[in-house]
Length: 313
Ligand SMILES: Nc1ncnc2c1ncn2[C@@H]1O[C@H](COP(=O)(O)OP(=O)(O)OP(=O)(O)O)[C@@H](O)[C@H]1O
Image (cartoon, rainbow, N blue to C red; front, side, top):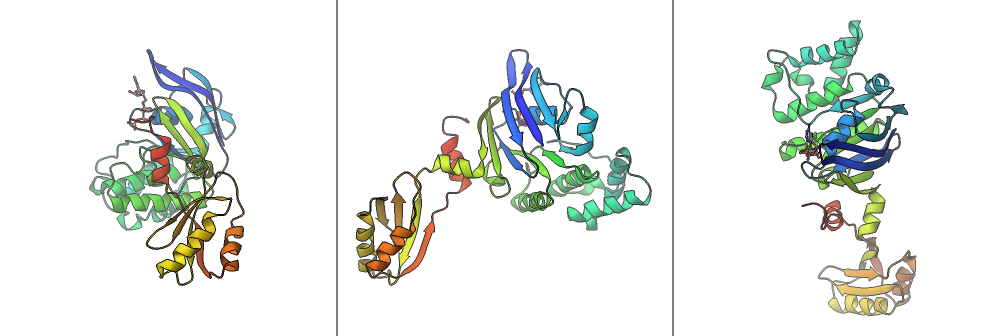
């Protein structure tokens, strides 16, 4: 749905973006992460056909930004990081104005405007003046606006910036809904954890260069090459039981290290793919019942800090 090759934009001697390669399939949700000035907006504006690159190729929905900008605009919804709203306009009027710009006519116009308002949970603000909305509501209205023509691809530039925690959660919920509708989404942020549970791919950009470009699963793999298990044995409230189980595990060749924590056993395996059922069998054969054997999840915040060590400032 989005394909970018060697994409570069120079301002004088400054490379705003430098040789970016990127490929998104239909339904992908791509978290585009980078500090201020990294090149996120530049990339999105090029994809939205609002800015020409210095060189490189970019296709959206198979259309080239150079030869088919009109076709691209029909299938994308671009929400810039800052956008104005008009004074003295009601929410519904604001949407109808943009719906008219998209040539949505007749009774369909009001119907679609009401539908997108409901989608972003702003139905109750239908008659309010746009200038009276909070920042979170304004962002949701901005999203409603880019959804009017039912675009396949959404380019959302920091939709959650400047919002309080509750409003951020609301935006995240909304993005999940759009993901479930099958939209291809590129969403930028300067903080990765914010996008943690909604994206399946991640790009980390810094000083115009895409330093990481992978699936969330692969990012996790890179960060943790060793699997860590958390295990509870029956009656492990008694420290002796846990110590005994730890000893059994320690001698197994796939186990590198066992830590006895106040709650359970934290078992680090040697690098590689392993069938962990051998450890369950080992414990059972030794007479320990098992109440839990799970893989320790690594959170994206930890992954981000590890991946960007020495990259972002
Ligand atoms: N019109 C312009 N003229 C000169 N330099 C520009 C222009 N637009 C952007 N830049 C520079 O290009 C670089 C990338 O900017 P860009 O706005 O793409 O970053 P960003 O990742 O979106 O940052 P932010 O998170 O602050 O929005 C920055 O160094 C910026 O100063």
